[in-house]
Structure formats: C-alpha cells, structure tokens
Length: 137
Image (cartoon, rainbow, N blue to C red; front, side, top):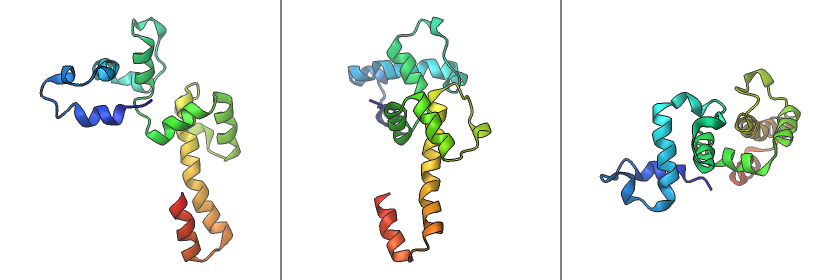
C-alpha cells in the first residue's frame, strides 16, 4: 500500500514531527529522511548494502510514483510491462533506466493516455459520444 500522499499531507503541518503521527508512518519517515540526504537514489537502483530495512528500501523505490503507476507496478511483472510497452510502440530510448520496473510502469501509463486520443481520431465519432466515452476513462 502506498501512503506517500497521506504522509506528504500530514508531515508539513505537524509541529511535533513524525512522533505525533501513527506508527504506520515510521518507515515513511525513515525513507523521507534518507532521501533528503541522497535524492539521487530516487531515480537509481538501490544497492543492497545500505543497512536499510526491506520496507524502507521499497518505499524509497516507489517514492516518485503516482497511484496509477503504482497499481501498474504491482499488477504486472517486468516482462509483461516490457511486452505491453513495446506493443504500444513507445519509443524505448526515452525510457530512463530500463533495468527498473518502475520506468516501464511509467511508460505504460503514458501509452494509456495516448490510447483514448488515438481512438477518437480513428473512430470519427460525434463529440457527444466521445465525451460520454471520456467520462469512463
């Protein structure tokens, strides 16, 4: 479960620091503090010898993802993501780090945004019907 949005809403308004937050945010706070010191690791693969717990490492890994990208990351394996992105003709040289699963998840979410626009151009449907379809997207 990704609670980064909830953490970001509460931590700046909390005058007592993370101690006033519930226990479930302890790992989020640890990951937040670690990323403040080393922000470059948000976009790189983390080495295993950092001495961090598995949960903190996972939270650092998913920090930059929005909810839709996180759901795609959890739903598909790396090979499935690669197949889907290549099938949607996404430019592979624009993907940042091809070894990271989150890079492929971001690319797949971008191609989903293109798909509804491509459908509207190809189908030549009236605008009222397209607006009804857009409401479900």
